[in-house]
Length: 277
Image (cartoon, rainbow, N blue to C red; front, side, top):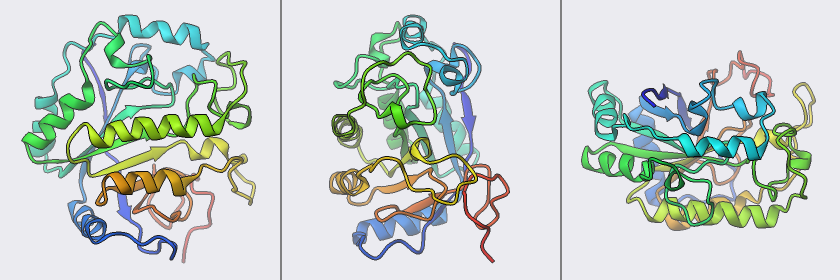
């Protein structure tokens, strides 16, 4: 595998977080530093790179779990070069890197103890997160980690109420408490085994929200963000949290993402909110 997809995203610090969240001094300092960095690199790739149709291929082609899982047996990105990618980012003037660790297909790019569907069970057998983390620390560039809130493979994800992944062949009943614990376990690994992590980028909240156009954007499940965010900030008091939900910041979040958009414009139609004056 000789290619990876690299995407640059804009993220801005959130200034009006709900009052019940009290960030630490380390966290406030990290926000200011992040706001000043301005320019970063998003490394966006994974098992879905094999079909070559983007990260939504499992959902878009209605690929069953048993069939998609087979892809790991041929995942061998021998041309991957962490040192070269980090060096390229630095030479381009970028101040941080965000690396996908696990996307909606559920494939983990690190040596996780909580899922067999991971990079160590492929022909490659190398921990991608460790390779990138080591180089970021060596070359003095901040590292953020992207982590999906939803999963198109796992039975315990509340897929019955999800908007996507409905045709991947799951027959069991979702169990969010079990799934929440799974996420906590994986996030603990990511935040304790790879040195200083600058923050976590979450994605997938929208899977449990009503269709676009409806005024009520209340999630169909309680994500227990107080527990999830509390864990992140407990493990890394300085770590910033962003969540790609296109809503006003939720308590515990430190920056707001605007995918294919700019704050206050909603030209991409993804925020479900009226543009601000």
